[in-house]
Image 1 (cartoon, rainbow, N blue to C red):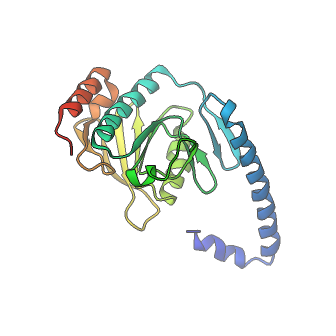
Image 2: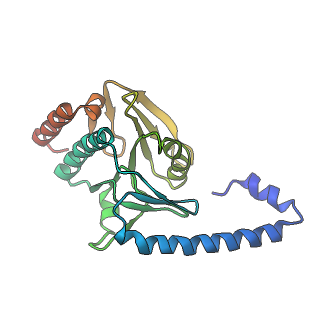
Image 3: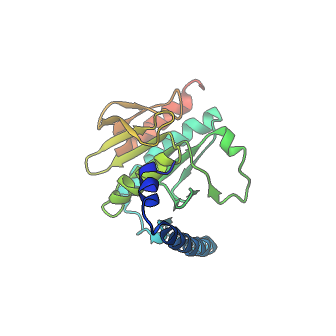
Length: 225
């Protein structure tokens, strides 16, 4: 939903037709650039995103960042596979939203969404859960444009994981809203994954490979949900 006050303000301007025409031209050029971005993806090995008309190439992941992402991914994926609940992707799934394209650190799609995919699917819709692990170069986007865009497109659950503070911020999207609400912020205890009822993960395991492996083993032997 477009912010009505922005549209109302524009409609009060005598230059509204000129502004609208200029905006259409710029968006048309942006879409041409976006198509060129898609055409280049097969040759791009680094994590790359298209954000507000700009191609953003990420630096190679740092070891600590990769370990944390891997720990979270392994626990969620174990639960999802064992219970036949869809698919989980790690870093290289391109999420195509209205204007922008993102490659989240981790994203989860439920069974209904997966039923629409095929072996050639390379651009994915808004998932049910997104996890972003912060880094100094990505924090502004993870807390800024992505935070807004994920909510606007109805992604019901968004996690921001801070390696420096060793904390999880779990954001949920109230039904019918387009703004996330902070549901949990903690560096201890468990987090209940709202997108996956029945899954509760120990937050310290996000930052400790041995604890993550122990949790994976527990999930493998647990009674299926």
